[in-house]
Length: 442
Length: 157
Ligand code: FES
Image 1 (cartoon, chains in turn yellow, purple):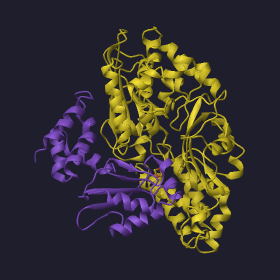
Image 2 (cartoon, rainbow over the protein chains, first blue to last red):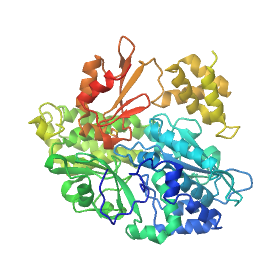
Image 3 (cartoon, helix red, strand yellow):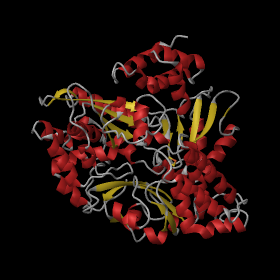
Image 4 (spheres, rainbow over the protein chains, first blue to last red):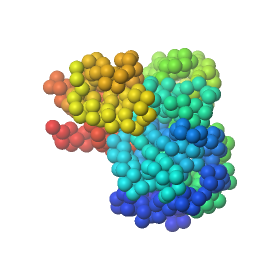
């Protein structure tokens, strides 16, 4: 368990480090279900809820960072009898991301409450939580929370005698990274292959079963109850003027204590690294992927000077993404790391768009041959050229994502690629393996 | 073929979560139910699921072949899946996969001759704070090491 400075306020991981934090009783003890009461019993209008969320500066925590209140305002008014949907994206599969898993395991009721409030705000009477199929424990915890909420009258008909209905179901996935793309998720909820849809129409007009739908990430929705209870302004001021609130950063790789750290937006990267115990074994930091492999990697000297918010990371040439901070120390072969990511994207391309389906394979094969000593100097231009033919030529953002690690690593670590090519192989380790701990290897 | 009762019960339950006119939405849960009961999804099972949901078989085949969790071939009693994606690799999943292969005497995608174990390499399991991660049945085993591999396998029937 991380030890936080005393003035840190946990929003979505509140209570997560207590005993049995996932039960209804534990959540009620933390003030649970008072926000939805404030909305429904207190007679807050839909617009007022949306205005509060807009004021909070909350932006989508799944990766895209789209302002949540604005997204909600795109939903048309509900027409009599026709359902509208709120879908929660719990398909957490971006490598390096494991925050939603902990919210679902330790604070599932806050997600449920956030969905009831969100559903009311957008005129949805049915919600689906799309949980990746591999997640069993989170599924059990969330299902239990839903059952408890029904039994306590927080879900179902005429909530708080307000005339508002909301039903909530889990839809389990079955192993497909692309199902986390919001329109692919809609297809998957319909029982189809998770192929991203052309947009427009956008989900707010044509979503699940062709009905208006909003998709929000777990962390986004779990942020809503505290925003309602304590005000948008309070949340905003936890972070920076353009990146409101706190954010969970999933820190993995070469740190002493990998784990989830919920910190205010705008926290310096160096501070987060310190919370995570610093680079393992006192090694030197080499590079960081701050938002999951779909965003560009940055070298140590850049990230150590950067704050963790949408704007600062943008200025540093990368993105906040899902807050998935992958730390690589001096023992890491960048080419090998990128080769692994290229293999991942090749495996997960849904195959719908030719540039992505074919391009992801080319990227992987070329990097593979460089790592294995058969690279040619012109390969680097080939990689960048292939990348430029993928980016912007696909239905969804997967195209940009698969190019990010390749292009950014060539930009920042070109000499390492060249060393592989000139030396006909990986200079990092004769064994072809990066040692886990320098100390043990010695 | 007839689907076993536990499978049809779960499919019936799943149907209640979606509008009555959208039986296809229950396909993924139906395939989970069938696989939990039968271990893998053969052609007659897929056809039976389609029949039970009143769908053209192609709609069930599409889901069964698109999603990685569905086994289209028999697997061992214990399906050992190990993540080798970036965070796990950085924490030396190579040593873990080496030990798994050594101990089981099989490579990725293979099943031991006694039918007890199938070994599969998988992408990120969303538990990278505990890298490297091994996934068997419904459990994640985090912070895996070659030594832990021995313990985990010894603990399985
Ligand atoms: S990279 Fe292995 S669990 Fe995420």
